[in-house]
Length: 218
Image 1 (cartoon, helix red, strand yellow):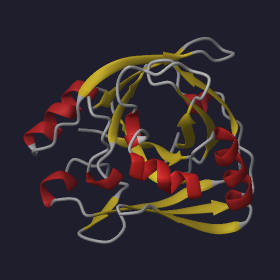
Image 2 (cartoon, rainbow, N blue to C red; image 1 turned 90 degrees about the vertical axis):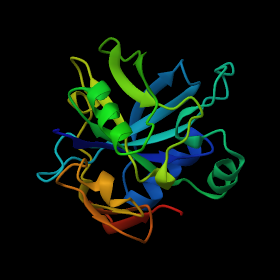
Image 3 (cartoon, one colour; image 1 turned 180 degrees about the vertical axis):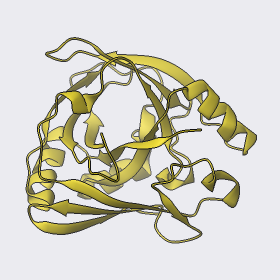
Image 4 (cartoon, rainbow, N blue to C red; image 1 turned 90 degrees about the horizontal axis):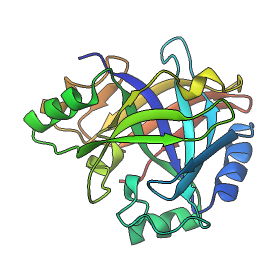
């Protein structure tokens, strides 16, 4: 299977808090994103693609206070009390998504390795250029699995967020995964180096402020 690193997920208690964190930590303001009606969340985005990780971006995501309850657990554990307590203190790296050509086949491969990545849902959000459509793996309970190290799978339609994101001066240099069983590591993108222990997600970025390391909580 051909999977690539699609985007990193930064959770925030509010989108305003997330944008302020991005400017203070990375030295760049994130671009506008949009709303996710299915999950009652909204986001802002930052291009972080590099030669090693092309078409990669950073997503700052938060619960949309103006949206009605989604009637189901939100993705990325955003409804979990522990996650909400952590994000109330500061935004943080919580997850990543792997881009693939066939999300159904990818979920089947993870299932054979013993992981239920959930159903593949058709999702869309409005943009100034028209609807952005994708298919994404989401568990019914909203869990990320492996503390965020096991990726959500995403299959894009005709357009990709990076197509309209401005250059940011931030680049992804390294993504290191910790705590994954050996049976899963062979499915992951070749650009990702997995290790047996340590933080679930360990990221190195080149930014206008110099090298920045982001580490997720266990």
